Image 1 (cartoon, rainbow, N blue to C red):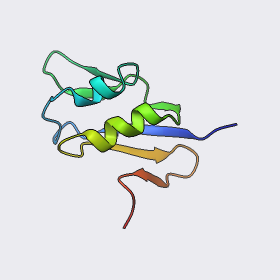
Image 2: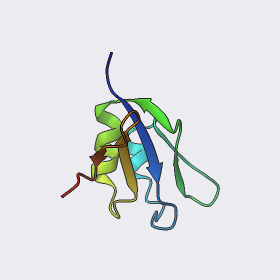
Image 3: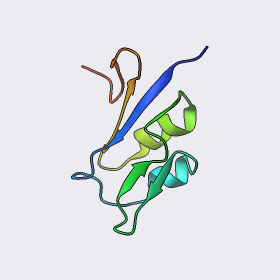
Length: 77
């Protein structure tokens, strides 16, 4: 069984660029204020969601392992 991720968007940082929706249309939605939110807060690990987090121009997307809370993105330094 693969990893499960907890996906969060810091709506105070999100600028509504829509890059996350472009990278992972099944993983993110923009609301009427153009603020991003995950389609599902917990999801199977997948490259599209990771690409969305990596491509966010303001790094508003955080991904952690659902089971342990360990950071996936951004990586802990």
